[in-house]
Structure formats: C-alpha cells, structure tokens
Image (cartoon, rainbow, N blue to C red; front, side):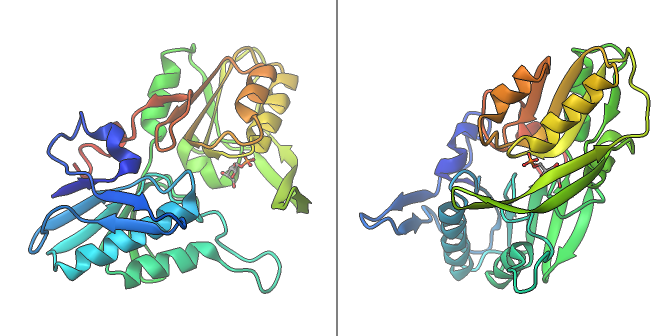
Length: 284
Ligand code: R5P
C-alpha cells in the first residue's frame, strides 16, 4: 500500500492508487498529521520529500511513521528520495552532533523496516543495502539515468566526479577534493572547498561532471573552472539532488556550463529526470 504526502502530491498522476496523507500546521507552527485509512496488516511504503524545510518535514515524517506503526502494518518502508542530515556523517571538531547517525537511529526506533533513498551522501559504495545506527537502508543510484540524459546532449563525453565520495557515480574517474576549515556566514556554518586536484586529460573533450548533490555549488563551480582551464570543449553538470543555494544555478551558468541536469528529488528548473523512474523496477 503506497502513501504520498503533500510533499510528493505531484506524483499522484503517476501513482493514482496512492492516498495522500494529511499534513498541515497548527497556528503556532507545530505539525499536524493524519493517516486517512487503516493500514493494519498492510505492507506500507510512504513516499515523502523531506526537503525543503528539512526540520519540519522530518518531524512530519516521524509523526506519520509513528501513527502508521500504531495501526500495526505488516511492514513499513519509507522512500525519502533526498535524505537530509546525511552530510554530517562524522565529526570534524569534538562535540559535534553526527546528524546522520541520529536521524537513522530515530527512524529505526520509530519502526521503519527499511529506508529507501537515492544517492545517500554517507553511502560511498553506490547501490545496495546498508545498515546505519540500526536502520536498514536501501540506496539506489540515479547515475545511469543522469548519464543517459547527458549523453543525449554531448558527444562521447568523459564522465568525472568532482569528489572521491561520488566516484561510484562516474564509474571511477574523480577529482580529489580538499576542504578548508569552517567558515561562518550569516549564521550558517560551512567548510569551503580549498582545492580540487585532477590527474586526467580533458583537452578538446566534452566533459560531464556528476555528483550526488549541488548544494552551495562551490564544488561544482570549482570543478568547472578547473576543467575549463584544462581545455575542455563542452561542459555539462549533473547531480541527483539540486539544492542550488546561494544562486548557484546562475553562477554555474555564468561559469560556462552548457546544461545542468538533476532529478526531481528536490524540484527545480534543473529537474529533467524523474526520481520515480530511478526507483521504478527496484521498488515499485
Ligand atoms: C561532497 O562531499 C559532495 O559529494 C558534494 O560535492 C558536496 O556536498 C556539494 O556541496 P557544495 O555544492 O556546497 O559544494
């Protein structure tokens, strides 16, 4: 039994059988959730985007999961296409909260039998089933679908990743990213990209740069600059999750990127691949 939420109601035409869970807010901003039908004895899959507004949308997910579990389904799986809080997966300074562990632990304790997600940041091995803080996680990669989309636009491109962590997406070819120390800007904390090293030749070639996420765009923009300096012909960027903070969509265009392609795990003007097409056949 599939359930959508207001964050995934755009999938209704493709999944007309899936009811939409009621999710609203009380006047003080607190979340309200109601499961519209009895799910006792059912195998439930809940499809929910937890971004944008990750804190609020995760709280709504927690309330939904907990209420579903009270109804005693046979199983509860959650499909959260972009998993927020996955990037803080280790400490850099002592005393830091490792949000990836905390989130997985909460979902496990709420009774989630499996979390299905796409190109989860802390899973560097690509597709498969993993375990973190007691939670069973099924990670699916969008890399093939994204690369197919790029290949319609470029001639025999070299596919590279700007970061070793996403090298499984490019098939192995990756730059080496060195991050600097923390910097604070407008209340936000961030470790800048200090350097990107590369050891392959891109002269006169079309280059596709693929990563799991474009957040502030710093990594992708630096990668584009390095590849342009190295004499590449045409450059396209692809990422599973496009947050495009700090006007990075436009800054990438200004840096000379021909096309930017992402999935709709987070909906933006770059969303040219449907995440349902990535998971279809695997779980649906
Ligand atoms: C790195 O660890 C990830 O694969 C991405 O390269 C990174 O998180 C992108 O972040 P930003 O767009 O802020 O550079």
